[in-house]
Length: 107
Length: 121
Image (cartoon, rainbow over all chains, first blue to last red):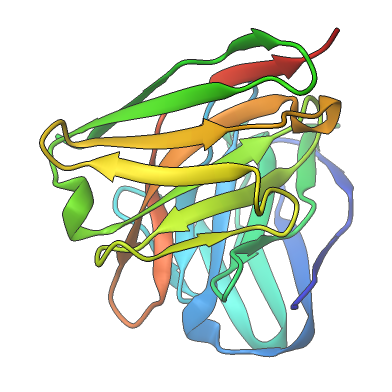
């Protein structure tokens, strides 16, 4: 079973700064099967990125995804106040594995 | 408009049973993959169970043999029957639609608001 490890656990940034979140897989995965979700307190997760780099409908272009093999990255180019949340990567496989999450908090 | 509305959560004693429902609108549950995903208090997301469009099912090892996923096509509703509940099953349970988007495997593109299950004596 593939394990996804996200880093850092918490990212402290100021609005307007760039955020870089990492997701590392325990073995090589197809980029077609790697997604990112955003979750705010008390809300359900929201799909941000699918197939490693494609933005879901309605997602602002300050969000971008990249990577292949075992290393994937979610980048938020300029943090807006509404971007402070927890972000999860996820792999589609026989079991839909999630990373443990990265919390992006206001510095 | 796609909507998913869960219900059925509550407080239950260890060893008890509970059935969660997820009423869908804006699409047909039988025409896509549907999953349950849970989140323990203050923890991350854990996939629980999946029902394929053809009716086959799959489960996380942590719930296999205790939980059963099903759907009622006439009601366009997804269910999760949870038996032999344990304290560690305490979580918010979300239903989520899985859809294949361009060049991707199935992703969770729509989620319900979640229903809280608390297993405690």
